[in-house]
Amino acid sequence: MTLPVLAHWIDGAERPSTSGRTSPVFDPALGVATKHVALADRAEVDAAVASAKAAFPGWRDLSITKRQQILFRFRELLNERKEDLALILTSEHGKVLSDALGEITRGLEVVELATGFPHLIKGEYSANVSTGVDVYSTRGPIGVVGIISPFNFPAMVPMWFFPIAIAAGNTVVLKPSEKDPSAANWLAELFTEAGLPDGVFNVLHGDKVAVDGLLEHADVKSISFVGSTPIAKYIYETAARNGKRVQALGGAKNHMLVLPDADLDLAADAAVNAGFGSAGERCMAISVIVAVEPVADDLIEKIATRISALTIGDGRRSCDMGPLVTAAHRDKVASYIDIATEDGARVVVDGRGVEVDGDANGFWLGPTLIDAVPVESRVYTDEIFGPVLSIVRAESYEQGLALINASPYGNGTAIFTNDGGAARRFQNEVEVGMIGINVPIPVPVAYYSFGGFKDSAFGDSKAYGLQGFHFFTREKAITSRWLDPSHGGINLGFPQA
Image 1 (cartoon, rainbow, N blue to C red):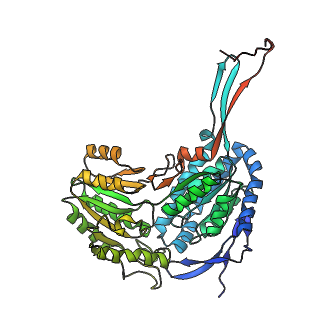
Image 2: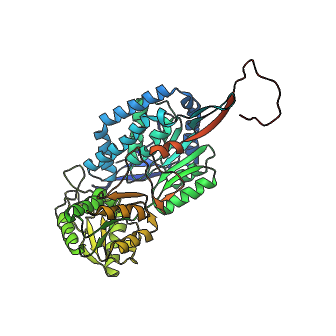
Image 3: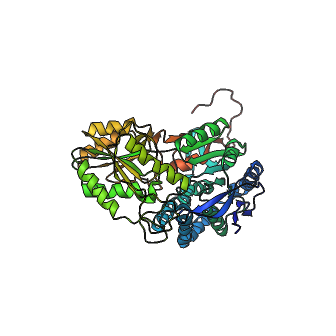
């Protein structure tokens, strides 16, 4: 059977690829390819950017009222049809339907923020800064913007960027992950239905050829990226070298510090939810629990009990956790269980060979819990990006904090405690960008901004929120004087009040 090929979305319609290159797209719960996705060549990169560039003047100059109406209509259509999009996410990524709907809801928050863009891009005005002289500022779009998004959130992460970029008057070329690309086309088609002019939002499918094409293209003015740290660093350095502004969010190794006074049932629930939701394929997943003694044994028992009650299977059924996105990724994540044993850690729960409610060919790996992980082990140092939760034991708050701050990553962290003083001290002393206090996945709401410290972020700007609007706009400052009939002629001196 010949599988369909997902085309690019350029200039308001699907455009079949002419590159001759494709990549398979799998249903992770079935373990079979369901389609292929086109992989762009440089000519197709040029075509997508040219479409966005041609659409930019008209979109930039369209009235604020009309742009806002289109955004409101997109928001309403997306909310009405989110179940359809959730099914696409589950069929290509593998996350369970409830998690897919949650992803869309968090993306919708940014769309809703973007509908209020007139307030967020307005300038300032100072009258009579000198006699008869006024100074004011405006914020305008930067032009064609490139967005490169990861496989783990095919809808939410693009929506961290493109609603704000488009609201501010820019045009977009989105390069989604080739592992689960269909959501991007679906969103582009929906935006067109909402009234977005052709060329304002384009989807370019591809691999490194497409990525490098956007990074190097002279007509692309900015790059937004979310992914692993090595790639984020490459994106940042290459795009910056080509004169672009860049926001590149990298990897993570998120710790959860559990103090002796914490509610251990609450902490265990949080650890399971944050460690194994979306099969651990979240940049904000908790992957290390730092248990301050004497709580480790009790906490491990509670977590293991909760793991035993989870149902692993096809996300379209009533399951708690789905498969991993590809067989290769599943195998890579599973290999860390052997590494843990070799390094002297104790595997409490082994997710290999787990019983599943799904097809035997799916890319399965069950929740895995590993105790006494040495901090020198790759199980501790690497971003595993799967359902592997490590336990590290600490003797004190200070030792636990030092472990977190020694990490090269600084994306997210959490503390579980009933001591307000300890929590306040932690938020002040920890070197991490997003902090949860008895909240395991502290992703900020849309009107704040998302981003970490150290090797978890490259560039000066976080995603969405006010920083997002600043990233996608540039400011002009205008000094103005209108002469009245009493104007007094030539004066070569420096103007003074």
